[in-house]
Length: 471
Image (tube, rainbow, N blue to C red; front, side):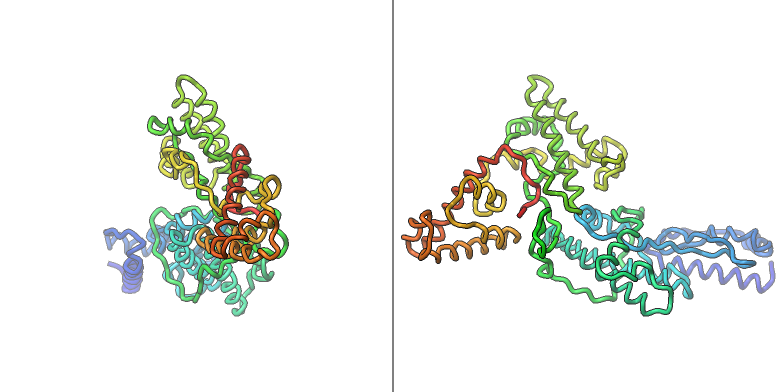
C-alpha cells in the first residue's frame, strides 16, 4: 500500500486540508471529497513535478479563492504568492456610496490566509486593510442618521488613521520602509491614494465576506468634523468638507410612465436646472455629471411635452438616451454608479427607475414656503437687487455652513443680535425698533423673508447650484 513515510505525508496533507476547511467554514463552501487511496499513494511515488498540480488543485484560501503560484526556487517547491489589495483609496463624495454598499464584497485577510512564518510585510498590509474596512463599516452603519457629509468625514478620518498607523508600524520594524510612508502629511496620503488598486471601491468578491474586528482604538464623533464648507473660491484658512447635494436634487429622474406623465409635463417649470461651474473642486465630479444629465433630460422633456401626440413615448426615449449616456464618462469609460454596473440595458433602466427619489414627479408640485433658510441661496441677489438696509453677512457666514437643524437656532440668535442694535439702526429698521424687544426679531425676520421672496422670483428662471451652500 506504500511506504510508512509516504502514508504519513498523505495523512498530514489530508489533516491540514480538513483543518483549513473547518476553520474557514464560513467563507468556503464545504463539500465531500472522495478519492482512491491506492491511486493517491502511487502518485505520491512520482517525481515532484508530476504531482505538484494536485496541491495546487486542492489549495484553499480563506477568501474562497486560491493563492497564486510564483516561479520555483532552485530545486524547491513552487513559491506561493498571497495577493493583498493594498492600499485602499481615499474616501470622496464620488466613492462614499460604493464604500458603504460594497463593504461586504471586498476582500478581508484572516490570519489563516497566510502561512505561519514569513510574509511579514504582506501581513501588515492585510492587517491594515482589515482594520480600515472594519472602521469604514462602522462609519457607514450610522449613515442614515449622520447623513453623507458626516459619513464621508468619518471615513476620511478612518482612512488617514489607518494609513498613519500602518506607517508607524512599518517604521518600527527592521525592514525596507514603504515608499509612500517616507513623505509626510498630504504628500503621504496622496501617494497611498495614487497606489490604490481599487480607488472606486467596486465589489471584487462574489459572496459576502465576514468582518474582522479591529484591535485599534479609533474615536470619532460628528463634532470632530469641520463645520466650514469650502466653495470653489473659498478664502484661505477655511476648511474643505465635501457637501451632499440639496434635498431637492433628485437623481436619477423618474422614468416617464402613464402614471407620472401628467405631473412630469405640468410641473416642469417648478423643477430646477443646475449650473456646474460651482462644482469645480475635486470630489464633485459625479455630482457634476448627474447635474448635466438632469439638465439634458429636462430639455428633452420640454420638447416632448409640446407635442400633441406620442408625448409619453418621446419622454421615455429621451430618458433612456440620457441615462445611457450618463453611464459613460467623457473618455468612454464606465461611470462608477450602482446602476451602471449592469451591462443589460433593460436591467439598467429598471435600476434607475427604482432608485429615483421622485418617481412620480410630485415632490416639486407645490410651491415651497420660503423661510430664513433660503437666504443661503439668495443672499447675493438680495444684496445686489433687493437690499434690506442692514448687512446680512453674519446670517450667511455664521449660519449657512451649519446643518438645517442647527441653522434654526443660529438664525434666531442673529435676529436677536440685530434687534439689539436699534440704538444705531438704519432707517429700514425704525419701525421694528419701535416695537417691544420680544417683537423686534419677528419684524426683522419678515423684512428678510420679503427680500428672499423677491430674490427667489427673480432667479426662478436661472440655473441653481446643486450644493446647499455656496459662499
